[in-house]
Length: 79
Image (cartoon, rainbow, N blue to C red; front, side, top):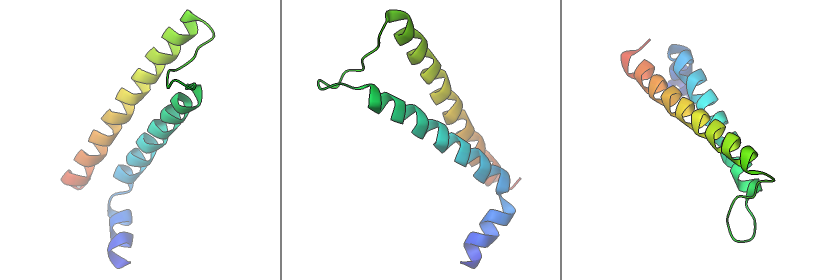
């Protein structure tokens, strides 16, 4: 328990970035899950909505990945 408390107090920025990244990834994957139909394909009401949603979600997933990398770097450098 003491090591967990020490980790939280010494690396709060890394934990915050990691938490935000995980929340983004969970939100995007949940949206994708609830858009799937019986055949496993995602269903959209129009082509424009599909293009926008897919592009927006890809940007969010890249952002989440960058936040994870930043959290790892903060942890390794000790900042």
